Image (tube, rainbow, N blue to C red):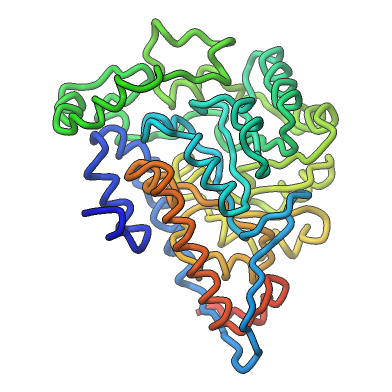
Length: 381
């Protein structure tokens, strides 16, 4: 199977599975507990039908949107995700370059493997810094200042990860940073020698956002342990309000689901929220971002920019979210599997397919711009 054989999300996933050692593939692919929410994230879109309009004269389609003050050529952005250079040696460098080519926004994680400064210097496309709230308040202030010094305009605080989700796939394989694998996990690495060759012949793995603050060399830190031991479960609305004031610019909360929390986010001055359940990786059984969207838009859609992520696999999923009032839609696994499969070329092919789907689907919907989409385009099945 080659990159040119990939025509949708599932094709990229299969190609990534062929390339990656099992523990790394399962880290991307897996969710929490019984993975109910992971599956529902995509299935939720099937409960709503699109109602197309015809004879609307749609020779030209404008896919651009503005979200949190950032003008994007596409209504999708590349969500911040951790550990990208484990998936492919290009990591966030590939993600950022592909986002720039398509004129959209990308995010860099606190657990990112390329520094936010390097990416901000290289790329003109908007960059989001995705921030975790640590017990060490000095670390929090230092990371915010580092983002500001780098010229990053959008701060995105993740609020659904104050403790680690129960990711049983990782427990079975022993996936951790640095690697401390079970026997079964080691055998799966041995079956994918090309990944290992790439890993040891390229730049040494690091977490540049955290390396100056957290010593991970002598310990084996699972992602669950990082959330549970390093992050602060006592984080409160007062803490976030102080951060919003200190940042003094575009500030977004990622991981909101309830309308009440959306109202509080608007009340303390946030300019955006992402309705998200962390890709089904935290609280299994949680409502999906798409299921929560209509209620939240009705509550605060006139006060704050609302985005969603989770389970996006098709252009029609994006159009359904936009029709309900989302300003933009975040992609996660949608670009991580292509990244793992083929680096920058993989991410660019995935974005090109998404762009083509969106243009085609907009024409079929009779919509010349995102502003033409609305609740009248949808029916609950």
